[in-house]
Length: 104
Image 1 (cartoon, rainbow, N blue to C red):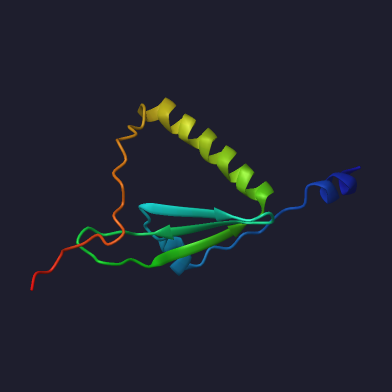
Image 2: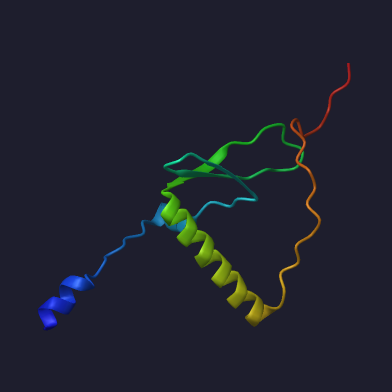
């Protein structure tokens, strides 16, 4: 019986190297999808900078995307229960060519 339980719930060993553990800051996520995958690009936009690069791209199956959305929703709920409501400030539109403008 114990061997049967072991096969149904195998242990998963997940490693986290030092560079990945540092993480990437992102203040913008762009999400695209096809019939078979969701692509989430994480970007760090800095004021006054004319362009930004994608810092990380995560590709998910639709099933994993749905699980991630549910997990985020549950974690936001727990966070708000512990720390109060997260303010959802009015979203400013992101200009296509943000940054300082030059004059001739």
